[in-house]
Image (cartoon, rainbow, N blue to C red; front, side, top):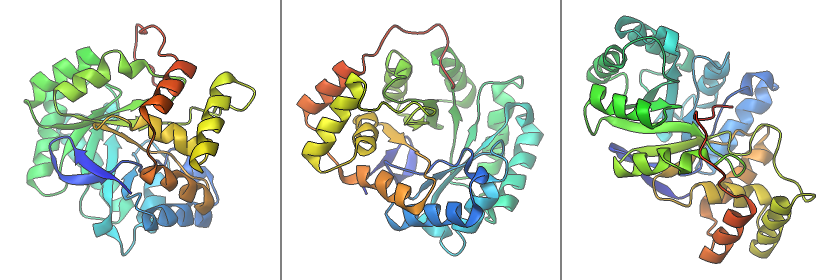
Length: 279
């Protein structure tokens, strides 16, 4: 599995990680087995959040005895992101995860509390050794400008955003901004929401043609496209150990410039939206 620098964090992180949104809806032993299979295959970047129901407890079970192998990320809800509640929310997440530390802690989206207060909470947690680093999620450029000013340059580890072949809005401004400021970009929902392109579409056919020529799957090709830039990572969810293994296969895949251009043409960027999409 390829690993890369993760913004200013002094760790290299797997380019293909594991998301856990709705993982608590699955059969729990199967969900745990999927996460462990992904970990076996190098998908050591685990992403979860207090908003994700019981996902943190599922992750906690999956990483039991293997915590040191994992780059563990969780998120605080904006409503809980005051200075004091940020600390309390993190401590609740640590309890559910059965660990004493997170590798990165994110503000899930911009909310009602001043960023200065949220980031002061993050810094307190970092000083206490409860988090290694912190970042944001679903931040557009104006939010990022405000976060950079509030948090001080060089402290924001990543911006986690919606990004898949049919939703490339971040490429207009968010991705370039993050690259210019040394911030990692983490793509969530990399297959969309039940809308992965099939062979009845032009894009689906291009994916399948490239996959066949590479001895890969269409989903592996899609994931590899999303991490084609050195600042980018992605966190697909897996519903089974077999699905996790398929996701992990993207970690060693490489695409040519011609193949990337084919995908770029098959899934055009489109106009810049007025608001950064979240769903």
